[in-house]
Amino acid sequence: MNHGRAPKLAGAAALRFVARNITIPVPKVHCTFEHKHVKYIVMDRIDREKIGMDWSERPEAERASLLRQLKGYYDQLRNIAHPRPGIIAAVAMQKLYKTRSYKGREGFGQFAKEAEFNQFLRFGIQKEDGFFEATGDNSCLTDEEWSELRKIIDMQDHLQKSHRICFTHGDASSSNIIVKNGKIVAMIDFELSGYYPEYWEYTCAMNVNSQDGFWKAEVGKFLDTYPRELEIEETRRKHFGPRGLRGRYDWA
Image (cartoon, rainbow, N blue to C red; front, side, top):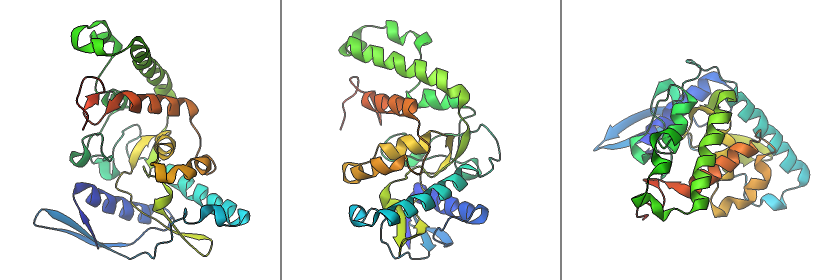
């Protein structure tokens, strides 16, 4: 049994959706319920050996096989038909969730197009709204920071025209891939999944915690790479946090 708040139920809905549509091994969800404002999920128990456990000690052939399996499963995810092409949203066109940032437990979206999603990621800042001509509170930013903010907007506006919106797990870390005897037996933790621009899986996977740093070298072997989008996302994370633009807010 798993328990938590709204993101957990979103993950249960995604698990059921994936199980119905493709052959990726995921835990079976038996039921969900709420008691005293806490959401509960009853699902199959998975004996967990995370793919990253002793990764460097695994034979090279085994590592290559696991990465091929993983590529096949992520390709399946990306090829799930979109019920409303172009919309950025979770399963059944519900709210999306992301850890720490993006309104956390409240969720966010949906978005009618990628331009709306990009504006959300940068808290509505546009070149046309006078922000870059403002003074006073904004003067705490250096010329380099101003330049990087402009670059984020320019690159997002240019690249958004070419992205496909596809189903995304949202947290392709090594801790969410379970293996046994050289086979992937489960993918777990779909709370952050949804229909996103095609680069989102890759950029999220590359922004891992320090304990999962070794995984960065493997991500490009099972996901398509998006170096320009990764540059944008790393620059954006440098300047924005859960509450807005860094330098204008007190970060806890």
